[in-house]
Image 1 (tube, rainbow, N blue to C red):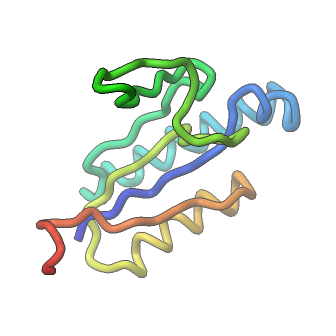
Image 2 (image 1 turned 180 degrees about the vertical axis):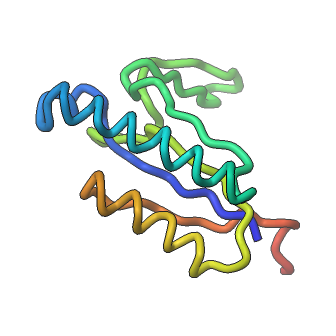
Length: 120
């Protein structure tokens, strides 16, 4: 089963709250996690994203698509990175997310990647 493991936040706020040294340690931790998941054959993809302040949101307004600055969510935090893993169970996906939470100390979202549209 495939799962997306998502981390939310703000690079700017993280740097301000935790400091440069912690951010560098976090990057080192994330690279090690990537290596471990590649070695186990569970990693499909994983990427860090640019800060939400660099995002664009495209909306349909008055019959025309319009791009505006900023992330879709009206929040201080937005998606900052993700992993897509192919694991045996939801429990394994949660185990991986728990490893991340233990380091970053912020919530991590785990969501199954659907194989097909839901039955209606």
